[in-house]
Image (cartoon, rainbow, N blue to C red; front, side):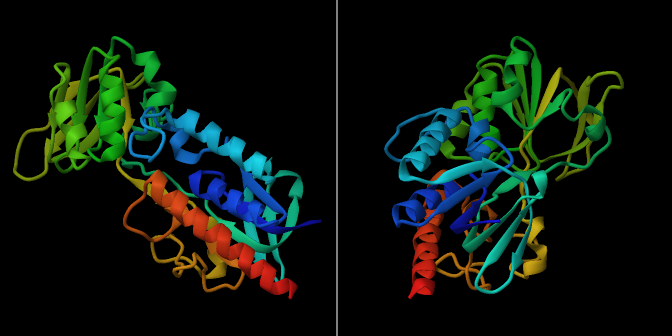
Length: 308
């Protein structure tokens, strides 16, 4: 079993920033992720509020970040972490593939979140075949066709702007009003092929062999259900934490997010966390990188103290 100073679980912006800081502090650093580095930004068509790079494609930004982790000296491996064992001085990171196990003086958990689902009739039947959670991945197949976006937050509006530029008709359905950045909302409302239905409850996805439409109804007053026909649906209704593998550590809140102090340390000495997995109010690339910088710095300081 190989031993590292710092093992980071999750290679999104928080994890990659932590890897750079830890490696530059002369820590032997390993970055683990079951998917391509970048986390949720890989699926984002346009990022316009990360300082210093202007407007950039999410996958492009992810590549730049990942290249920098390698330049700093951090190692990377494709692994699915299923458990973290706290044995005191060492933490054992247990992986699904090949029953791999890594010993670490410090662990940083930066696994982020996954898209939340509606849990309504028709969703499971059409998931991945008509219903998607990634416009940059699947949007091109709907060029010149009719599409529905469910959600009104930043992700929903940003991806709607992309989709509206390639589809024939875009319908946005949201439980509340649009809550994204006002400038983005104004831009979306001004697009001629976009219809927006705020204050709605989505009831059902229609179609048997293939997705045919969405049934929804006003949630603020009584009204008859409405049906919009479409070829595809993209859901952006929030995110769920992905730290189930560390449930036995007692470091999560009731929602499954990880609790940390100002140094990104959990109540378990030597275990830190960063990024969207935290119990926090704002989840953005910039805040994830800030969390990662703190976690990498203080994890390295923790390991350095163990050496003394």
